Amino acid sequence: MRLVYRTVAGVVVVGLVGVLAAAVVATREQPGTRPAAVAATPTLSVAPPTPTASSGGAVVASAPPASPPASSTPSSTPTTALSTALTDPRLPELPADKKLAALAGRSAPVRSSIKDERSGVRVPRFGGDWSLAKASPFASRQLLGKIRGSAYRGMLVTCPVPIEVQDSLRDTAFLAARWTLNHHPAGATLEWTASQPITVDDRDGWLLGYQVNYTIKGEKRRSMAALALVDVPESKPALVFITVPDAQKKRWRDINTVMSKIKVL
Image (cartoon, rainbow, N blue to C red; front, top):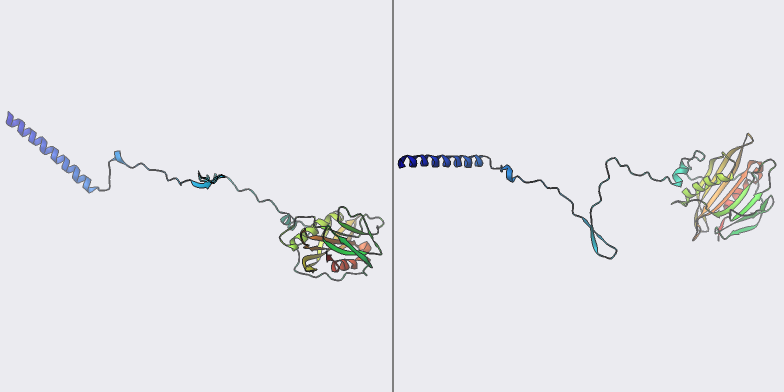
């Protein structure tokens, strides 16, 4: 009986050895496999926080900013004064450099000059048909006589440029010309007659000449106008602006006189 038990035990041992050997062989045939129980758990890669300096000088860690949701859109850029003016149908695009031509008529006599401390320039004071007027809201003002049946007449004014100053005098002058439409009849439009850089007592400037077209009581009328912008020291550029309607066109040559006699204080 003992012999039978020993024989059975031997068979069991031989069977177990065979199973283990088969397992070892199977493992060697698949060297890259691991039991599911010890499979690696995936991990998320998180960027380290960026250190920032606190007001006290200490370095404080701050988490990286979160990305905006996919549906978000960037805010629109505010429209600048210049971009608005460039789309204004009342003003065509400025031409290439073009000098102011001599206008019709004969210049009024120059009595003296007006010293505008606020703007930093000096301009001619005309006699004859011109007279001094209350300056406000400008720094200085001269007017031609009244025209029967019209509230509009010739005007020569100076003041610091009353609009937003741009990166160039040319662009600032363009905006200033648009602003002068406030002093012409409603619905007025411009046609450029001059656009040129100027130098006034070694200071840079820009001159614009233009014809102003409008309608009064159903009749088409026009004025000739010009402005000069002068880059005066320690102040906004000085604006010298003159406009004369066709009913007073004998004074159109005064525009040339003014533009040629501006002085820096």
